[in-house]
Image 1: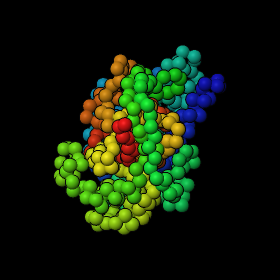
Image 2: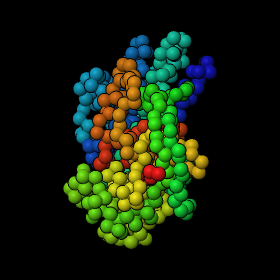
Image 3: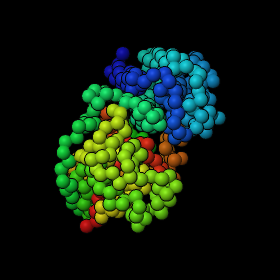
Image 4: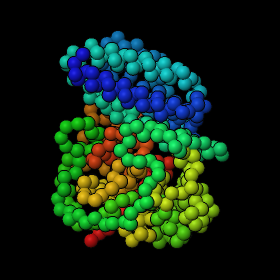
Length: 411
Ligand SMILES: [Fe+2]
């Protein structure tokens, strides 16, 4: 087995195994539930990521491949119009069949076929399938984060407020670069000055990236200063205490309409009386209900809440370009591994953007309207998944992702 093949097989095995490890603490019932149209059951994520390999790698490139079940193409296609009709997203929770056991067998079937394909591939075949398998692995890592965030939302709808993992457990932090709990006392916020000028934005060089990170291009920035760390829960509690959710002058029009319509008066997983003092809030999270940690980065904010907080704080959200240019700034902290950071940039194609060829053309480009870019990565992002140029995106009202705030100010 060549070095390339064994490295690819090792990466494949590691990513596929990590999905199962994330699901390991969950019952079959936990893995079948869908709490809202935006969130999917764990079982669906486990099957859909498998369908991706079957559809993009095996069917076109493995001669004689026999699908595990032809009907799964309808059940587990997410949004690929070119691949035909599919089961409605809001009804994924109704799929009590196939069973979880069947989905595990589907995963094994596809894993064996992928191993057979790359094990006996000639150089040309390998050159063709390696980029597709790599894309499939990064795709599965994106769904690994969704397994966690979607499950957290489902658990938040259960009056028992179950814990996904015990507070003291190292959990899935085996490769984590940043701590997920027990935050040290947050230092007073410092502002780091950046001079701006023409900066390079986007991916270049070797290594994997998604099409939306390309092409690298020049961007002109004015001088600005950026917060050395993320906004904390304690700071966000002060915003609430100061009537943050009752002052329309702090909010974008759509945001003010959203909080009126939805009755929002705190982050989605905060538990407490309206106007509760900082010390009285509790927060529901992966370890169940915990007292609010005032030093932990605030999480699960919508873009609207992030923008209103920034306005209240006399600052603003960074553009994605300011964020990327500050990635290595001396003294900057918490750029990855805590919460995704909302930016003021709408999710648009970079100048010269071209979608990937083939089926993967639908991966990113068609979502480039009505969404905001987020940068960084969260405690649920698989270790090693993101880069400084990585562009995540969600609609401005989304609150079930692990999303927070970093501030910038004009000079
Ligand atoms: Fe997907």
